[in-house]
Length: 293
Image 1 (cartoon, rainbow, N blue to C red):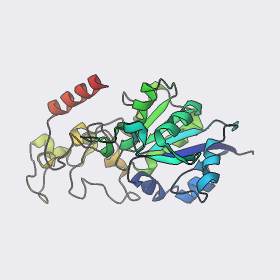
Image 2: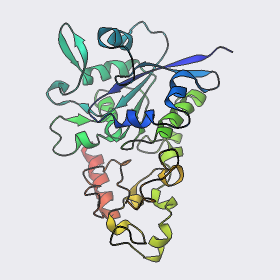
Image 3: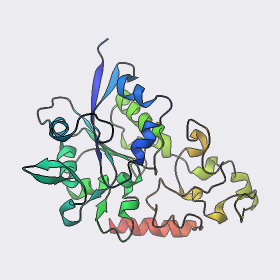
Image 4: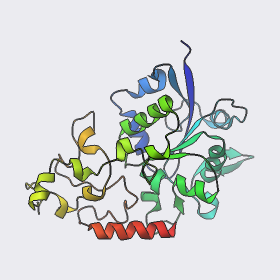
C-alpha cells in the first residue's frame, strides 16, 4: 500500500520551546515513531521544517520551508506567540537580501497557502506569557493575526503550558483520518472537544471534597484545593483522566492546584497561581477580552 505523506511546517515564535520539548517526551507513540513511522495506517507525517528538531540549517532549511512550487498541501504549526510591535522585529526566521525576515511576515505568507493552521500551546493559541501585560513586543495569537489579516484558513488551538504530547498527536491523527475538523468538533475557542470538552473540575479526584465544602487551607492538607488557587472549576482539559509523564501523575494528584494554563485567562488573570478567583471574575474577564477583540 502506498503511504501518503502529510507535510508539516512548524514555526517557533515568542516562547520557551516547552511545547516542542513536551512533544519530544511523548511516550506512545514516541517522537521517533511520530517522525519515521505511519501515525495512522497508510499515512505519515513529513516534518519539513522545525527549528529545534531539523538537521538542516541556514538557507537550505529556509528554502525547504518556502518551497513555493510545493504541490502537496501542508499543515502549518505555530508554537509561541507572534510579536507584531515595531513590524515584528522581535522574532525572525532567516534572512532575505541580508536582512532579517520577521516571524510575523513568514507566518502570514505560509498561512495563506496552508490547508490549516494548528496553534500548539497557550502562547500560540491565546498569546500566553509573551502577551501578558504590559506586552511590549505586541505578541498575538495565531487566531488574532489570521483574523486581522483576513486570512481565511481553518485553525485549531491546542493550548497548554505546555500541551500534553497526546493532545497534538491526537489532533493530527484525527486530521489524517477524518480531515480538518468541522466547527461541531471544536469549542468556541477552536479547541478540539475530545480533549477540552469537560472542565477539570468535573473529573477531579478531589471533587467530592468540593461538594462537601471541605477545603484545604495549607498545602499537604486533605480537601479541595480551590482556596489555594486551583483554577480547575474554570479550566477545560482532560488532565485528570490522561495524566502526564506517561500516565504517572498530574498536578492535583501531586498536591498542586491547577493553574488554568489551557485558558485565555492564563497568566494575567489565573495568576497569582496560589490565589483563588471566582467564577464571576473569570466570566467578566472573558467578556472583556471578547469585546477588546
